[in-house]
Amino acid sequence: MPEPNVVSYTSLLSGYISASKPQLCLWMFREMHNSPVLPNEFTFATAVNACSILVDLQKGKQVHGLVEVFGFRFNLVVCSSLVDMYGKCNEVDFAQLVFDSMADKNVVSWTSMITAYAQNGRGNEALEVFREFNLLDWEIPNKFMLASVINACASSGKLVSGKTTHGAVIRHGHDSNDVVASTLVDMYAKCGCIVYAARVFRRVRNPCVIPYTSMIVASGKHGLGKVSIELFEEMIDKRIKPNDVTFVAVLHACSHSSLVDQGLEYFNSMSWKHGVVPEAKHYTCVVDMLSRTGRFDEAYRLAKSIQVNPNEGASLWGTLLSASRLHGRLDIAVEASKRLIESDQQVDGAYVTLSNAYVLAGEWENANDLRKKMKQTGVCKEPGCSWIDIKDSTYVFYAGNILFLRGTEVLRMLKELEREMKEKGRSKGLVFVDVEEEAMEETVDH
Image (tube, rainbow, N blue to C red; front, side, top):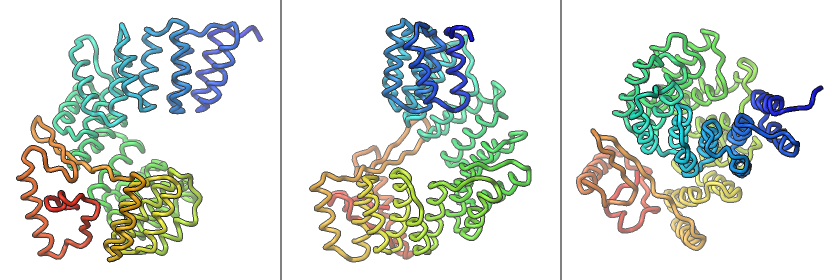
């Protein structure tokens, strides 16, 4: 075999990426760095891509350092991959610095920057970057950019911007694309427009598993469990193979629509019928499904029977904790809280939920002891927040904070809703223990 050169090395790196072996890609990159062969822009872009896949910020920064040393700091291809890498590693500000340093930008680099903001919950900034891009008459958005913009609209609740972007999708001929259609379905569902989501889905000529899964998720979250099941069965009839995400979606839909028997049937058929091995996320859905219908002993036995890592266990035991607290199963709530605290996962939420469980059970002494322990260890609950987009303005509300526009009007409406709930016997489960005393007099913990 002739002596390896930059082309053969880079081809090998790309091959490892294509074979889903980013670790080997970085190993070979290191071997190349120790050889006389000098890397080119595509070598660096491939190595950075490996760091993105692994979400390895430390190695990504090391490769970035070599980019600077070898004089590729302003290279279009390399910088676009760096923006993408920093975005995937939750370092959006670094991504912005690289993006701003680029003398030339193309649709790929703009898409990487928009995606970085959208993936990290900074939808408003993603939309601002897209507005800047639209001022460039010589560039046309591609399907990947439009999908990222739609995700940004979904995460920030910008229905009007979402509809405007949908118009751009249609103008550029991407409305039947599976990925774009899936993001539109998700956006409309998150903005409360499930009918629009269904229309978008039905416009896709031959949908694959991706739009089907998005529509199943959307229907389930809107309490349309039977619709989710119909869509799932439609998939199977069309010989479209469901994946692990599809099963999470259909199990979640069954859980939230009290379709336990149907959900258990799907869960039990995953391996032998569809070739999908159940993972921790599927077990979590089943635990949630059983808990919602009061079958706590079954849910508890299932939770104890599976081996999961701390992150997966946090979701599993967190689900059981919330349900057992709501239904007054203090024994299971205590055990679930201990599991979360011992694994150092969701500690703040575990303390708060267990405290509320003690209150519901009338065990005020235990609740007070736990509250004291929370203060001693510096544990506090992050305030919840929600928002609504009206015309061109976004209104954000934080739990326990009445200092916002039209706050008095909103509080008056909350008081009226609280009164009606009590009249109809729907006030069970209202707990004020994790709200500061001044706020308790003004807000409803719902």
